[in-house]
Length: 153
Image (cartoon, rainbow, N blue to C red; front, top):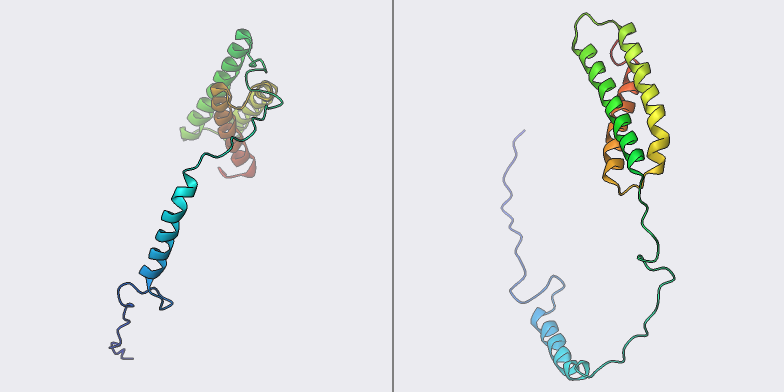
């Protein structure tokens, strides 16, 4: 099958004319003249908007401060979950590791996830510790799901 080149050229509209065939500068000049006429009206002072007071200002609510011991406990639980993930990673890398050994490691990970869940519920979402613990727990949850689903068989 032979394909011939098309010798048709689509031409652009002449300069100053839009796609609908209207002259573009006439629209612009009309809007510019209207804006310049209204500028003198716009320069007059406008009445100030009424000031509305919010029901609660951000400073009226005391910030939620976590107990330092509670924060340390969260970091310790996050570290324990990271340790479980590292053990699981070592088992995945070991050629002689059995699925039974990996199952014990996954069970331990799930237990650490259960211990971490109530603590994470008490943290505000904007807290950096909450964000770190959320990342760690998401990774651990994905790995436990992959193991239970049978991805490593």
